[in-house]
Amino acid sequence: MQRIATSGLVLASLLFGISTVADARRPVSDVSRVYGVKLPQGYRDWKLISVAHEAGRNNDIRAILGNETAVKALREGKRPFPDGAILVRLAWRFESSSRNDSVFPAPQSFVAGEPVNVQVSVKDSKRYAASGGWGYGQFENGVANQDAALTKACFACHARLDALDSKADLVFTHYSQ
Image (cartoon, rainbow, N blue to C red; front, side, top):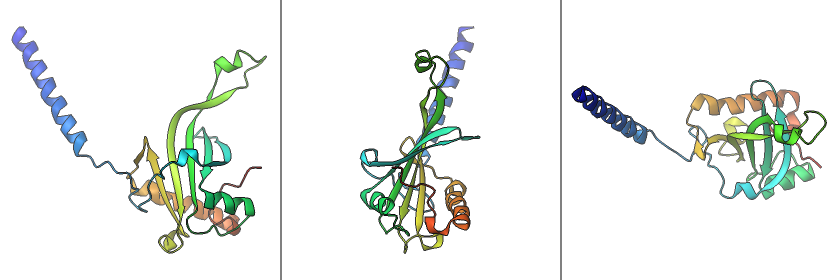
């Protein structure tokens, strides 16, 4: 019986070691696969442009931040955005807060839950000419998502907006006063 237990322990250790080596070989990158976009340094200190709640299957709450170039363009209504504008969209699960609701007469409080991802849009009209001048990246836990289909879908979605509002320069967000 002890021999079987020891053999099982050895086998489990071996399998754990193999899976750890396999995980270590997976490429981890800070650059998006399709557009080469990086998570900007210090983006969490950028100015807040707007917030949004995305219902449906996403069911998240979002904060849209911008660098100085993007914020200035939004405030001034300047379109197309100038090269160098960067927009960052942070998303968290949209969750009710029973703690906060306990203070109010009825359930009404919703808060940011677990983080979902961070999406980055970078304006460079020459480098990203094929995608309307914008490069895109999605990041989970600071690591660029390497799914090319997912990243290519960013432009496809933003291009649908262009059909409705060509003056938006492929940007859903507006500056909230």
